Amino acid sequence: MAETLVGELIAGRYRATKELSRGGFGAVYLAQDQQVRDKIVVIKVLSPREDSPDNEPWFRRKFDTEIEALARINHPGVVAILDAGHLDSGRPFLVMQYIEGYTLGNALTNLGLDIGRTAHIIRQIGQALEAAHSKGVTHRDMKPENVMLTPLSDQLGPPKEHVTLIDFGIASVEDDQVSRKEKTRLAGSFAYMAPEQLDGRPVPASDLYSLGVIAYEMLTGQTPFSQESLFKFLASQRQGVKVKPRDLRPEIPAAADRLILDALAFKAADRPANIKEFAEQLAVALESSSAPTSADTGAAWWGRHLIWITWAAFAALLAIAAFFGPQIGPWLKSFNETFKPAPAASRQIAYSISVQRYRDNKPYKEPFQLEREIVFEEDYRIRLNLSAPQDGYLYIVNEGPELRNNLPMYVLLFPSPTANGGRPRLAPGQSLRIPEQSEFRFDHQQGFERLWLVWSSRPVELLSKLQPSRLEEDPSTVQSLTKLLEQAGKIPHSSYSDEQSKQTTIKTQGDPLIHLIELRHQ
Image 1 (cartoon, rainbow, N blue to C red):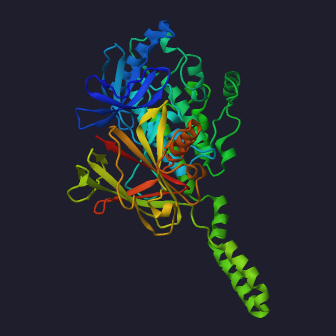
Image 2 (image 1 turned 90 degrees about the vertical axis):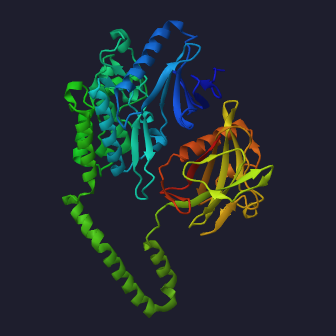
Image 3 (image 1 turned 120 degrees about the vertical axis):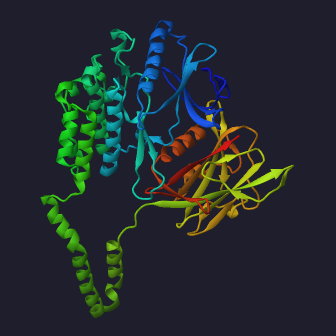
């Protein structure tokens, strides 16, 4: 098993609390800055090349290049570098800004994203990449997994996110000390790589090509070229795009379609010159999709008159019903149900967290509501207060700060025998205190306690099988639960916090609603 730094103090300052990922370059950790009020940061540590010591110099120089790239760029759309140094072992580390949210890869569906949302994201990616290019930095690994989306929590309308680019691990920097041979070393995800990059000659226009692929995927749910093999991928690149975005999604504006195809030109010189201008033009073209076209005019007329026609027909049917009596009644009921507008699929839930201080196992001082920054101490005990306007099934899962066999440790907190009669189903408007008669008391392990709220219109089979208040130890169940929570939990949702009541309302278009609450135990 690879060495882990979880629990260790890095550079006498950063306490590693959780391993986030591990890859070819090294491991990435969540950590607390002990000198800045336990500020949360992300630390990347270069792994030793014990299996391939000859590659050690290249990996070290690329790690240094990433530090150089991030140090050059100062833009809100690019992850910020905070610190860098070496462990006692000599391995370099990089401290970066912690970005809340989820990746664009997590947000993608096989049908694509909303066109307006795509425009909002594309515009920000272009601005961030232009900031990098202006400092002589080419990202070289642009893909959905390297685009972080942070929901803007102060609005309840259609979800909008702030975009942050991450992982400059294979970036190239002008005038750095890496040799041309090492610069041209093939690295990245080939589905998003430009032809010249696959040929070992990346240029800034390679990032624009990657952005074109990302835009294509955001709108259609698929990438433009075959990925059966690298050989077929190269062949399809040379042949050009066979299936245009509009072929898969006709509502995409023609201007946006052309811009994406321009970005995917085989030769770098044939692509748009400036990535920021390209992204802005594409965003504007996508946003124009709401403007009516001549083809839409007829549809608009039908849209305006359909209700009148429908209800005129319905009035006629009522007259018929008065004549024929009860024989037609059931048929009319069916007609009415058919034309009744379907409610939008959405879930909504509100919660607050109350805290009771304990001393010598007895409560003291008055309970209080936690502020937005959820931090609790050893003598705190907490209770959740929840309500929802709909009926549905509620599950609350606790994920502890430690791992067991590299897997999370989960405990089902609700449903439980001590709350709501042990039933997961809540009635519309029902208020619930969890636990009803006591408070949650966490163990002595410091770090992050995660509470997953799952609010569904129907029972969740996997969660229904868990035993309340018992640690789930079956590896396959834990893996399935991790996938359910982390994937579904990254579906965008809006939130609103009432400063007076300290109540937070969560809303999403989708089912189930899965929301993460992180409690920092210090």
